[in-house]
Length: 314
Picture 1 (cartoon, rainbow, N blue to C red):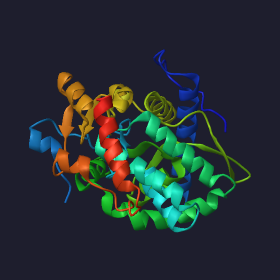
Picture 2 (picture 1 turned 90 degrees about the vertical axis):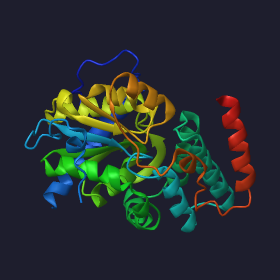
Picture 3 (picture 1 turned 135 degrees about the horizontal axis):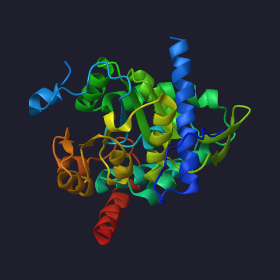
Picture 4 (picture 1 turned 180 degrees about the vertical axis):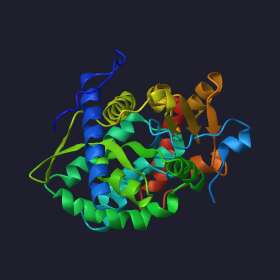
């Protein structure tokens, strides 16, 4: 997949693989958005806060970028996708236990742990290797209805709709596979999605990634590349995320928002006077909620181990 080669100056911390992943995600997002165009009770946050109207209606050089996991949707898309594949016998019970463990960790820790997220993506890549992209896209539509549709945060959905109503494009930016992210974006009526790009040859997955997972600095590179290609002014754009891992992306734009923030992002956002929104019923409930997929005997022990490990790490 060819790179866009349209990046503006970037920080030295971005690795070559982050740049490649960002450019690949931006190119895939633009292609899917153009294809969609060819086939083709909102919350007034600004009024509540007494601030100037935002987003600005008719500002076509502005756009909004939304993280997916725990920002737009409760839980992690890759885990829900794994549940759907297990139901369709793509893998065995042992792998489901692994997915359930990873989901339990995500919910208990309340943040994206790069090691655990990488492990989940490695599992997914091994499972889809040799399958056709079209097959996984079709199954992804069904999985969205089964496991994801009821987990969209209404408050975040309203924020995205406000940008759409202002005539702006709205993109998901996620470490989830770009195919899954594109399905979610389309179902929500958004412009498109930037996601992790899995390599495919002749429409068949090879089991490898293009670059690296779209996580942390790679997300910032993807947004930067897409903004350059779309002619956007990042100072007029907005970004939304729950995770401190997305501080590089949030720092790119003129209007950063912390949504359902983890502790590190909350502290960072308050120090910089970023706006915060929390749509959870309570942080404790969000942390201890057990995923419905965890109808596996080993989950109870895995959950206890996750709590213990989390305490040792933090």
